[in-house]
Length: 368
Image (spheres, helix red, strand yellow):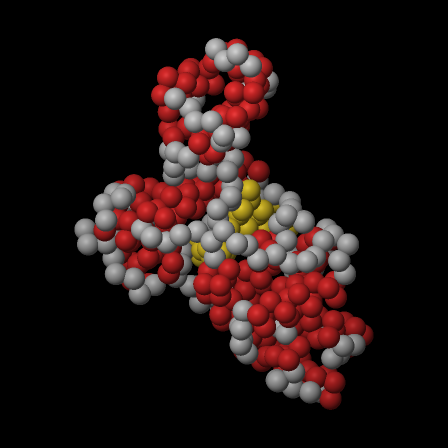
């Protein structure tokens, strides 16, 4: 366990038990609190005897201090959800922390180094919605997302930005999350939602990753394409522009020239092609000045529901991601982790690991 991670876990327990650094120093037999401060900051390693003392004084099992497959205060989450009970969300966060920690721990062991240079957006809470939309269009161009940005966004985030994007089966009410670690950024997306919702959540969480330092997101936010606090509104405008750049939407129609009936039909058709919701496209056209707000209000969202389909169409993407599957398969093949341990961390059956690998075109571990 790296000194910084162990020190952080000691700090978390000390603060939970409302101990000062002076009090902990006395319990350890140190001369002053500076030694505790150095441990908590990762500047000083903990000896075996000191670790035993920590277990006794802080009343925690050894796994709390040294298990690398846990996130103990090392990951900051921002959850996009609706109506989820706090205790349920906390429990799921702990579970998600296991497979995120597994990727963090195993990646360098199998030769996949973390990216230490992070992209950032020059935005803050005082930025305008126009600034956020311009940033979305710019990112779409810089990542070369093409004529259907939603189709290549997840791959570009992993390949170009070093952000781990995982499709997951979360508890009911969770749409997705952004997670910031010292050496890794992660986005979780509920794969059971319709494509338009998934894609918007992905772009929205990308905004949080790229502006985390300037605008740390709330731990919990409501899942909605409109509304929310100012940071969430900026994120929504960024996501809308990234998924629907002006040059892209203008390829489909001369929006100003369409009659009301034709406009509704074209909104549904174009939204389906771009992997977004027709309602989101409608308001994107308003922001681009292609249609007026009055025209947009005249087209009821009910007429755009499900992009005109009678029922929701969910084409479920594969669980987790190709990059994740490559890491766990190689780690298991090299004997760095057992399949049983992997299954526990991923909350799946051992036999499911082969199917997850196959769904991403990755050869399953030999033992399977």
